[in-house]
Length: 328
Image 1 (cartoon, rainbow, N blue to C red):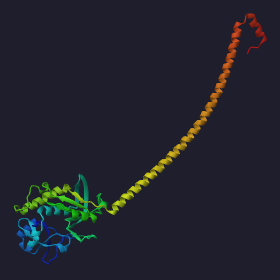
Image 2 (image 1 turned 30 degrees about the vertical axis):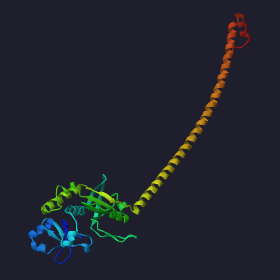
Image 3 (image 1 turned 45 degrees about the horizontal axis):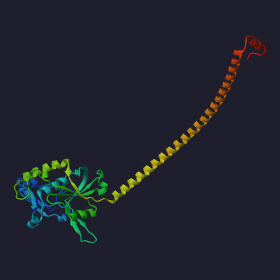
Image 4 (image 1 turned 45 degrees about the vertical axis):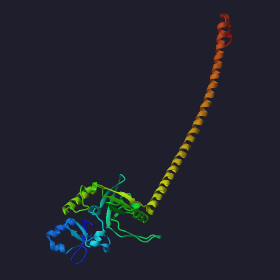
């Protein structure tokens, strides 16, 4: 049985109803519809409710159950369709969120969505297989503020899962066709102590209360898992461009460094040559000083010899020598 908490509607002129001054189809919540039925039955009777697929041709008529959900008017289709209140509620809340903070493998990814497609029909044609047709819960288009924008072309499919995860064939087909999938699982914690499965033991008030409680939880963060993770050609090209740019920058930096080293080398060589010239000058001066010192030592030796000679002479010899030689 299908249990949907929201629907689109046609008026008495058989036209889908849109939000005022907007291109968005108006959402009819089950609790508002049941209130309308109780308070204004004539206005309620003018409306026909439909499922919320993106492609109008796939929308089917719904009826509002007093228990708090929409179901398909066709009993056969309703019996063949399995959709829980948990799935429908989570899907509705996510579609209404222009900004979603996904927590994926302990990493934060902030998505700013410009629009959502609800259960669009995606057709994949492979060369060796028949056409495959899928209806993802949501396809969202997000802006380039998210780091996954280039990698995923700014588009992601969001699948809400309650009892069964996305099967391998679907994940593989989406990845081959460059469509990423983020899977949001309805865990026991997200059921918030409710029980909307099996026998109907709840009211529309319980469903409305659950909607607002889950919406409050999703406002902070939504835990998800990436099931399909394709990489766009643009992403690869950007990575190549970044690497090439980094290589060029490193090469320029190395060339500049080499030029600085060469200039420093020339400066050091000039300084070395100047120091070498100064060294040679000092060596020459030292050689001259050594020559002068040798001359001084020789003169000192001569003077000492003469002094020793004078000290050994007698008085009359000194007097005689004094008159014979002029004093130096």
